[in-house]
Image (tube, helix red, strand yellow):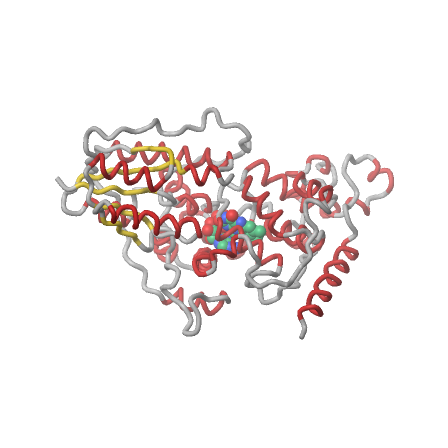
Length: 463
Ligand SMILES: Cc1cc2nc3c(=O)[nH]c(=O)nc-3n(C[C@H](O)[C@H](O)[C@H](O)COP(=O)(O)OP(=O)(O)OC[C@H]3O[C@@H](n4cnc5c(N)ncnc54)[C@H](O)[C@@H]3O)c2cc1C
């Protein structure tokens, strides 16, 4: 019997899974393998919220495989050494893997190929598993990636998606391949109390509900902070419990302006992935530097701490930061305005904010997090790098009645209507009754500091 190993990474599902389908072809036995990769945990990337969601995903994957006669094999250690070990134990002649974009994933692929080839084992790397349209599949004539979203989206939209694949009916795993217990949520500390449940079953339920009753209102409702009218599918896309190809097909089949607006957002995900695939260093270094001399942990520790804790004195910023801590997730509009506040109003290094988001976000993702932070800091792909979002204007537009702020900042729960966005304007006694800080910085002073910094930097950059 021929045996294949399928190495699961960010593709923790059975539906629409090209590597598993290819491995099963020719009535093969398959070892579905997940390696708890020491390099990932060692790099501090394994935040508790994501570890908990991952545990749910692995349990669900194991259950799905058991329903089909198989099981998940879990190992810990160096991913390359473990794959080689399992391949040898199972006498496998091929390994299947989904392509991925980060520097780490690209290096993992190179190392795996080298090590497996030395053992006479073929590595098959599959496209369109973690992206709807792969990096490089659409590229401008003069470069290896698009740096501007609009032309990218034009090409992306015309790309002919492959058909989706059903989940396999049967998975046969060879006898005698040892596994560690599937990791569990139990024993993990530091979890956000409102953290969502993970797993493919949960993701498919959420997708079905979204297509039935959410997507139609997306175009009008997606920016409404209190309305919470986005899909919340981001952690499922991050862990691959949902296939981006299937998501695009099913959203397009739903049709209408809501679906179009939603598919456009999914294309943003692929856009950032193709930037990171071509420029893996952009996870840590400016994509287009403005030669900022940012304030950092050393020079702005109190401001940074107030931002992290949701005590800036700007209610909408504080509400969003507290949502992040409570749920391990934040509304996109909240991410934009808290990132603008940190990088532009407080003039703090975008990496400080990106790190904090990665510590908490259940969907925390190298491509989407780092490049969205760079976009907002003006060091990324935004064509208006010096734009600054005013938190009061943003709050009045996207939380017009103040309900989002009252939901997350209980100190302000008694302040009615939009006045909640500017507590410093309340009459003296009302203001004095609130246990809520004064604004950390005057907005016009923050703006002036940022403009000075960028002009200085632009002058320095001039010949
Ligand atoms: C500073 C900052 C940091 C971010 N960090 C992350 C992150 O770590 N992981 C992450 O998945 N997204 C990140 N985003 C993008 C976006 O905020 C989230 O994808 C979105 O809020 C997730 O909620 P949703 O699934 O309900 O999105 P929906 O509005 O329902 O959108 C559907 C899907 O489209 C994709 N998408 C939506 N908006 C964006 C966007 N602006 N850029 C790229 N893809 C998008 C996501 O995969 C999302 O699940 C970040 C945005 C900012 C401004």
